[in-house]
Length: 142
Image 1: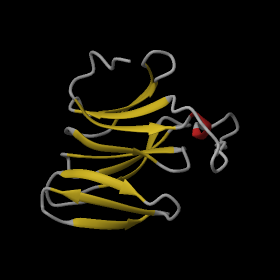
Image 2 (image 1 turned 90 degrees about the vertical axis):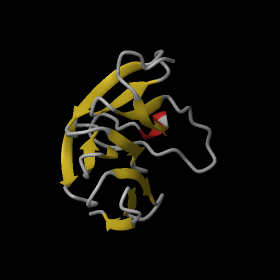
Image 3 (image 1 turned 120 degrees about the vertical axis):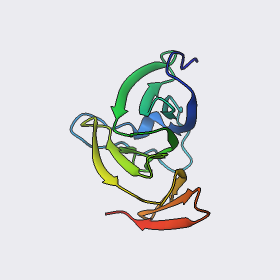
């Protein structure tokens, strides 16, 4: 699978096909212990985009989010499978809705300098971010 022609990729995150939002707006979570194929991939790039890819179809881009004003340094798929979260050199953290293909929330100035990493708790609505400022911040998501 090649993600060619899209600039330098800075971050990647898999999403199980069982979590891809279904028609009607619900996601179909996989049962614990069930095998699921990891057919989808989110990427963040230096071209300031966050993209959702279909790995199974040879790397076709399903959607592109264009909201960052500088390089995207971190990306993750929300455990629900409904959102992609990203962070970047514009000092922001953004939440993108996969179903509507739009930015739902922007946390401007999340750090005083570049935001370089994000991680999410698997069951609690807690996001952590790290930055060039040598700090880690915790965020309670609604």
